[in-house]
Amino acid sequence: MIDIRPVEFDPFAEPEITVSVHEAEALLKNISPVYETNPVEFDPFDGPEIELIAPATESQTEIWASCLIGDADASCAFNESFTIVLTGDFNKDAMFRALQDVVNMHQALKMTFSGDGTHICVFKNVTLDVDFHDISLKTAEQQEAYIKAYNKQYVLTPFDLINGPLFKTSLFKLSDKEHYLTFVVHHIVCDGWSIGIMMQDLSQLYSAYTKGEYINLPKGPLFTDYAIAETALSKSESFKETEDYWIKQFEGSEHTLNIPVDFPRPALRTYKSHREDYTLNSTLANGVKKLGKSTGSSFVTTLLAAFEVFFTTVNRAGRNNSGSACRRATRHR
Image (cartoon, rainbow, N blue to C red; front, side):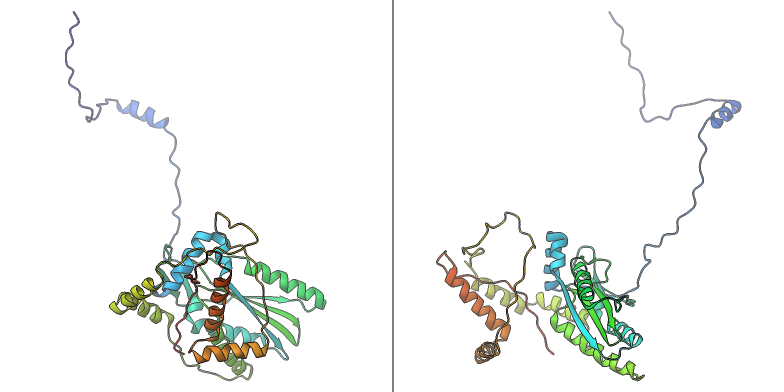
């Protein structure tokens, strides 16, 4: 027979270790030395000062989601580029000063987004960095190739929506009498209409500075005020009624048109595409405008309606209950 006796054991009790002073000193000598570390200066709030924070608009959150899902290709699809050709005497200092003032005036050019894309952050000050290229010694063919390659690289480079800036400016000197001023901006902060307003401001500022005059342009409405107002509207009862109305209108609409295509639809949606430009003659363009005016529609809306009619004629499903998704812009100016 084996005699088994219970042993008192406390797993949480600290072990009792007894050593002499000399033994402790000997043990400490064998311990690896402790290295001193210098503190690292780190300020989590370092960087440009944020002046205002507001909720992102519905259109901005849609674009943010597209860029997040589609990665760099999708983000670059929202890059907008345009060039101003300047001929005659040119004052570079006056232009740089005017460009900086335009940035100071417009929140869109000082705007970035929170990490989750739900809010816009407007910096108090943003210093403009113009990329200047003097290509006056190149031939006309070389200049054209240089600008084309440079702009292509610019447009295909995605913006950092969180850290910004969300616009780029380049100035090309072709000669003393000819300069190209190129802008690339992300559509999440600017559209064609707002760009036109900024260019009007730039023109007035540059004209004044070249003459050595001071100009005080009137302040326009703040984008953050619009974003806050839109958020408040989206929570109102009237907005809910309007939303319910349109949801009911499009009930049963087809999500995919059955139309003849040259290639099979890919399983995974991408933003790789191509663009075709066509010029409408003045007679046709004026006719479309006149038709739209008779129904209280804009030129773009009338063209979109014709586009819808075209799709109904080629839809092999035989049903005409379809629609086209498009972004809308509400303007009061």
